[in-house]
Amino acid sequence: METAIKKTRLLFAGTSPFAEKILSTLLEENFNVVLVILRPEKKSGREQKIIQSPLRLLAEKNNIPCLDPEKITPEIIAEIKKYQPDLSIVAAYGKILPESFLQIPSLGALNIHPSLLPKYRGPSPIQSAILAGEQETGTTLMLMDKGMDSGNIIAQEKIAIPKDDLGSELSNRLSKLSSHLLLETLPRWIKKEISSIKQDEASATLCSMIKSSDGKIFWNKKAEEIYNRYRAFSPRPGIFSFWQKGKELKKINLKKINLSAEILGKNIAPGTIVERDGQILVATGLGTIEIQEIQIEGKKPVPIKNFINGYPNFVGSVLN
Image (tube, rainbow, N blue to C red; front, side, top):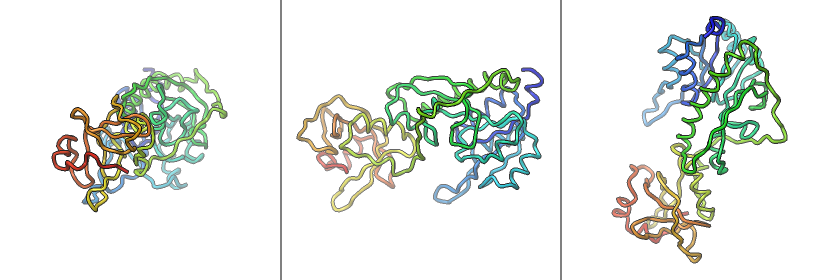
C-alpha cells in the first residue's frame, strides 16, 4: 500500500458484529484508524451487567481511542476534530449522523450499507431482503449525506441469497463482501481516481427497525412467508407463537423449522399441529411447516421429539 494511503487518518463508526468485521479488515491491512465511535453498550442479562462490545474490545486491543456518545453534540464534534480525521468510514452505526459530523473529514464520510441501494434503505436491509424472498442482494459503498442511506453511490457488488440462508449467515457473507469492496475501492477514493453517482430516488425503498414483536407468526400466511420470517430473524429476535396448554396460554419460540412438502388438506385449520411419519407439522394458509426445535418461554430449547414426549397433547392443538 502506498505511503500516502497508509498515512490517511481514518475515523471508524459502527456498532454490530458486521461493523467489527470491517474494522478488523482495515486493521489487518494496516490502515491508520485514529478513532472509533460506537453506540453506548446497554445492560443485559439477569444481572444487568454492561458487557463491552467486540468492536470496542478490538479497538482497545489495537490501542485505538473510543468515543461512545448518546448523541453527537457540538462538544463531541469538537472532541472528534482533535483527532484530525481525513476520512470517515461508517458501518452499521444505527443512527443518522449530523451534517456537522459528515463535514469534518476533507475526504468525506463513506458508508458501507448491506443492500443494493436504493433498495432497502434503513436499519434492517439484510432481514428485509430475506423477508421479501429476494434471490440476490449486495453491498453498497456510498458518500454519506444528511439523509438515510440516500448519498451518492461509489461502488456496489452483488451476492446470491440461497433459499435456506439464515439472516446470520447472510450477514456474515455480506460483511466479508463489504470488506473486500472497501479494500478494493478505498485507495482509489483517497487518490481521487473515482467519483460517485446519484441514487435513483424513484426506485428507493425503506426498511424499518426490527422489533421482537415482529417475530409473531400468523399461520394463515403462506408457509414460504413464515419460513422466510424464520430465516430473516435467526438468531434474533426469533419467531414465536402461542399455545393453549390447558388453561394457560404459553409463548413458544420456534427455534428451528423447515418447509415441508407434506400436503395436509384444506379442511385442517392454519396453526393445527399434525404428526405425520414422525414429523411434527403445522398447517398454514398455503403449505406446511415442519417444527424441528422448540422452546417454551423460560425453558431451554429442545428437539421437537423430546418436547412431544413431555407434552403429547401438543399434537392436535392449534397455535395462535
